[in-house]
Image (cartoon, rainbow, N blue to C red; front, side):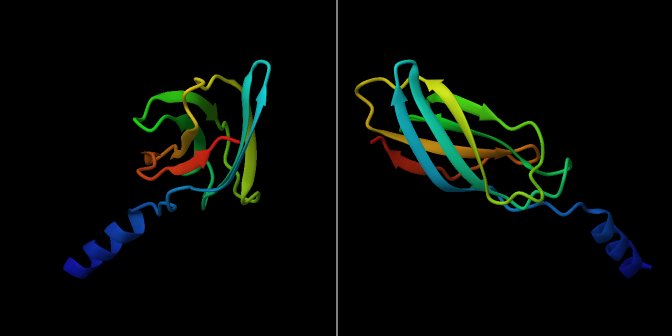
Length: 116
């Protein structure tokens, strides 16, 4: 009976995908701020677990811009999404990209990016 309870608890536990990884970043300055394109990879399983955003941060974690992703990308991996109008102060030459999932929240790791 003890083994049956253990087995049932494992079956009832949802499988969670790994944290999203940032595969590529491009950034272009425009008259209205920067346009960032970020390529993510995540083992989206559908609406129950998917990469739902990325953000640009300073070295001390201040958010400079965010891109919210409104749906899973189960069959589109990796995938790239862009965000325009991101204002980067002139004294900042390096930013960091951090990805998020709808289950686990913001990833602990982030990817460094030196502005062109």
